[in-house]
Amino acid sequence: MRVVFDTNIFISALTLPGGNADAAIMRIVNDNDTLVISREIIDEILTVLARKFSKDAEALSRVAVNLAGLGEMVYPTGRLTVLEDAADNRILECAVEGNAVLIVTGDKTMLMLKRHRDIKIVTLSDFLKH
Image (cartoon, rainbow, N blue to C red; front, side, top):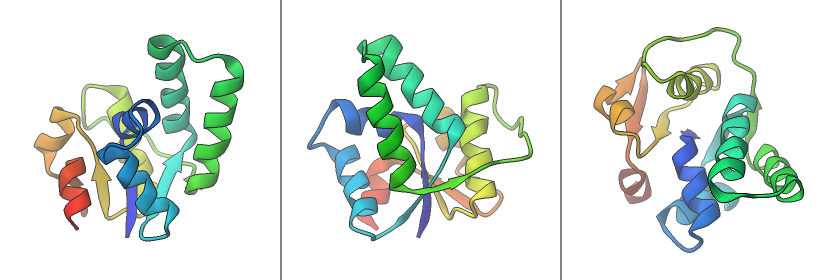
């Protein structure tokens, strides 16, 4: 299954090892699902890690390389304005461009959409149940 993880899933996996977000990443590592990711998502993750978790340049570089190698990189060409938060729209763009089936997020605004086009938007716990 082709899936896009919202930034909050990656941040949780990177800062709280052994949790549900970590289990979601392991589904990707074990080839159970295909992660679809974009440069914009990686950039947002790095920004949050630097700003909120004081990660240094070397740590951020390692994270960027690992994330890029974890999934299939897509390069969205169109911009969406479905949600107020521009970062949330970047998640939708990645999912559309990458032909994802699911978006996994903890973002309440995105979850209220329930779906965008044919892409279902689910919580982390719902993703892990499938």
